[in-house]
Image (cartoon, rainbow, N blue to C red; front, top):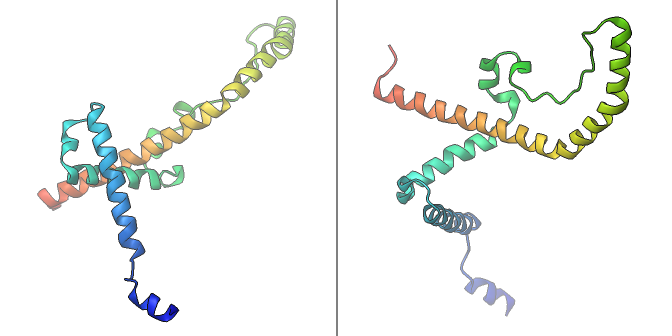
Length: 154
């Protein structure tokens, strides 16, 4: 009986089921975004799918080692979030020692507590920045490809 039962079951493609599920999720997301005031251009389901594809490509390639924009921005010290604290003093040597001592004993513990309190936020912001850089890169690639189709390079 087991052999005849398996013969009667139709073959189900996992890829087809996943594609259908992803399509329904995409459609629900599109409807929710439109309902909450997203661009009216998202009424076009194909356009929404294309935008989602480009943004997914950006998110998937969001590692900072594979991005062009950080290289174009130049020195990371000018644009990357700096979380290290440097305790220096511009004062004369005797006053500098007192000021640095006060900073280390009073200010540093408070700043360290604030840093620990916000560390997760700093990491989230770093991740969002990397993903946004990747999305901008994907959009630049798409724009360059479209320009090549419209005006072939010489």
